[in-house]
Amino acid sequence: MKNKRVLVLVIILSLMALVTGLVFAGICPNCNGNRTVPCTVCGGSGKVDATSADGTVWKDFKDCSACSGKGYTMCPTCKGNGTVYP
Ligand SMILES: [Zn+2]
Ligand SMILES: [Zn+2]
Image (cartoon, rainbow, N blue to C red; front, side):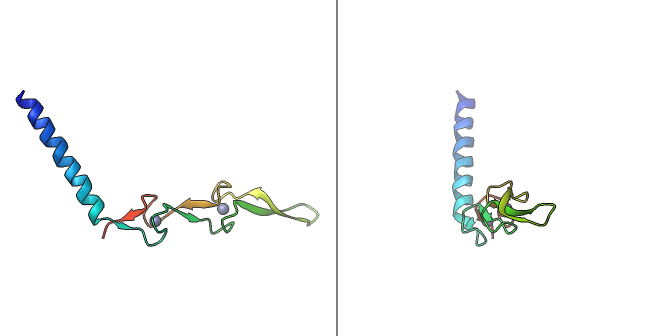
């Protein structure tokens, strides 16, 4: 029975630490808490132009390699957390 009470206390303490952490954490100014930022290589479209051997440009033909065609990348400021600690 004694061990169980200790366990409950540990859970309560870790919950408090979690809540305190959330209060002190600020929303990331770089991504406004979105956790991702638009890809700078493709401008958020996820596609980049391809040029064929004869010089023809195929607009938005290839998947952007920087963001794997998603159009956004993980925010480097908060490392994808959406929050930063002061
Ligand atoms: Zn991209
Ligand atoms: Zn961020």
